[in-house]
Image: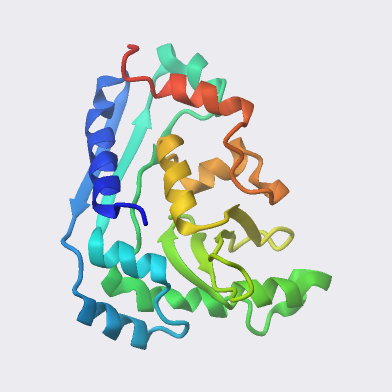
Length: 228
């Protein structure tokens, strides 16, 4: 199991150093203590699909409410580096902000979004709903979309999927085979906002995060704190 407390400390340290890069920066950092095992049991009992093991571990050993967000406007002098990764993107955002444990029950309304509107999903509606209605959201992307864990007992681990609220052609995108793998890869991707990753790493191909993608080296250079 990942040391979630250490993962959070690294994320906080990364975000706090970002203002060494040029441009205008906005940051929001909030790290609350973990919840108790008793509180986790009560939370699990209140959720339609229970509390998945990876989230339980995160909330009980890492933080019950973590936010290490950043917003960056690099400015014209740095725009050429930005364009090599995010073409025509003049602001970047990201950083981990998981749904707080106390708010998790409220976010399960996402499972009901397509109830009564299955015709919008076309011929694959049954397959889409089979996944959508068996997910536990853990990140609200901020544009109406979510990252969620897919509860599938036929798989050895719970995959991370992207739930897109307004794309009926591709409402679900596979992100990672597990929660731990997602956090590990996301750290290497400098916690770029999940909605931005969809575009830059071609996630609409539904193949998950490609850590060998040609743009990842450019992303590392973009966030290289040794360069000004």
